Image (cartoon, rainbow, N blue to C red; front, side):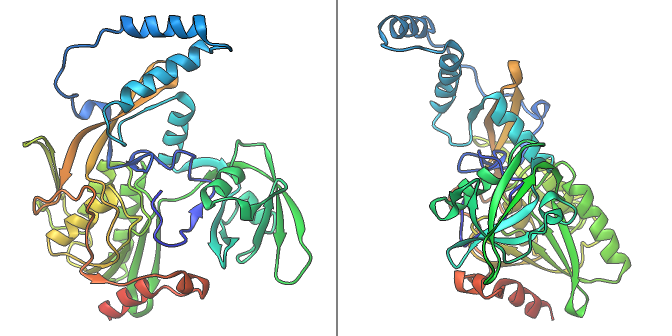
Length: 391
């Protein structure tokens, strides 16, 4: 996953593949689509696969070792898909496919804690209420010095996350340093964790804050609920936080976007080559006249860029923060035999002004940085600037 600063990560959410729908350095997708939404591209003459059989026979006959037929076949499939030369078109073996689907449903197994690197140490940002981490007594500011006996300083943040999360019922031992007290070992049993993709609160001066962490299957409905509650409370100013939102389902981005746009406004357009294959318009929502600031950074990708671009081009919001990641293509996930899946780029998307942001990203109207020093000090100058702009 792209990182601009030390990013808070839900240990129970991120899979080893980083998330493949609208996100990814392995994934980074943009609106994952349901397979029935579009057909695949033009057919070309099939290659002569008999040469692959010949290659396997020669490998099996000559290789000084053991060849696993199932692994060889899986590798051949992955290689064929990789030959497309598109980082977002990938073959997903069953385990990776399951991790992807679990992450997009907002449900994975783990301990339920946000972690980040603070002062070069793996640090608990916050345990999620009601999860094994919270029940075990982990506190914000705890340093995780070791994971199952391995020094955490030898791990990247993503590697640490991968080691902490795991299957329900399994255990992980964390060595915790809290303040100046002696290190203690905490054994935590992993469980299924449900994490909402939308978080809300009311800030000073009755400013509504909506954070979307990822566009999961329930995101659109949660945004609708939040919008209705804010409208009932008389909230007329909104901060929409899309920082480090890697994307997700396209239809959920459209549903969420409709809450902030008048009915009929164009949200996004899909094109295959120069041909327009789909246009998505707002159905209208409860906050379509609220003053808005949208927070973005280089971790904002795919579906979150679609939403930010729609609000910007329709002159509904000021974008504040840092340039977004730049993921301008649409993937479709196809189910294959044995639980395997094919994630394939089927189109590219364009903002209402007809811009495809692939690789370039979306530039904020107001550039505000967030440094490691800010994070270490518990400061958020981007959010502060958004609040000041709306006051």
